[in-house]
Length: 283
Image (cartoon, rainbow, N blue to C red; front, side):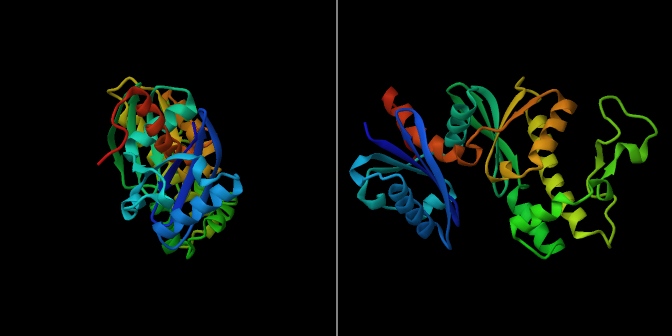
């Protein structure tokens, strides 16, 4: 059996991963001006870096919004498209080892996918995500360089931006410590530092995503959330999501390859459904 290539094609960024004998092979990410250039650049680099010949590739599986721009086989190889939400679910379950979860896919916006074993379905989402972070940073910080934004945020003080429980109450409220957020950005002033604003923007996006996921799970009985997508790479995730775990008595899990889960899931769409003799791809 050859290697199955999963590709998550964004508008300018493509993530690619191989799946061989059930193991992930060296995922990479490539950014280019458009999805076609990004995909072919990523594919060529992936084959070259991993010394994979075209004849070694059994199947190419694409997903993501940018895959709509690709309408022919990649390098003449067997190529199909996987449903993005199915790919999110399969990739997240594979990477987390859990099969009763809500997948929180933090991309330009955020989508929520409920997984109950083989029952994988999109349950909603919000228009807050990496696009929100970048847009607000352009307006408030005059930069869209994520490295600069992260560097600024390291030295920011969130208590200068968010209204905390300790600002409005002399004592902790039930289930809410004094440093819990009462209102995002409520204390921000016109002369707030760039460092404080950067910290505030990142915290606002991540807190909003985490709280939305928990609220969406209330009627499901699910208490485990698998976080995937580019925003999982933000250092603030390691502070904000554990804090939300304490508030809500839930668990947020970030897989090893959280950034590449959708690409992994695209490859799994082929290997999983082929083994069952079921339809592999979407029309």
